Length: 105
Image 1 (tube, rainbow, N blue to C red):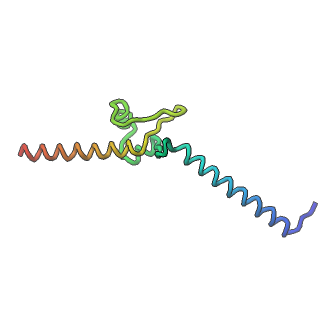
Image 2: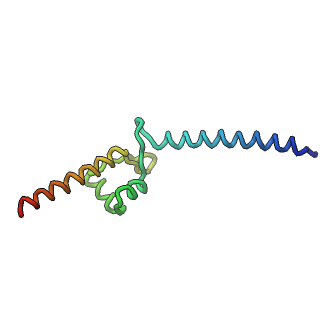
Image 3: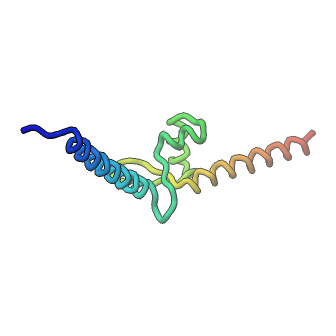
């Protein structure tokens, strides 16, 4: 069975179009899996990099209920807004500590 170059290129173009469609669908599904109630979810690695902390510190944050988390299929996730709230709280605590220190001097 022989096919000419034009027919081969036509088939290849159709295949590549299908790959592009599948790629878009996979991206949509991945984005859907990483959000809940329209809010982006982060996994452990994302949070560790964002907060620049160790995995043990993140575990302590979970244990001390500093950061809420969700367990989905055995994997831990965090809402982006919750992580931002932890950052805001740490800045407030730092400002309060600094103000108290200045008052003591």
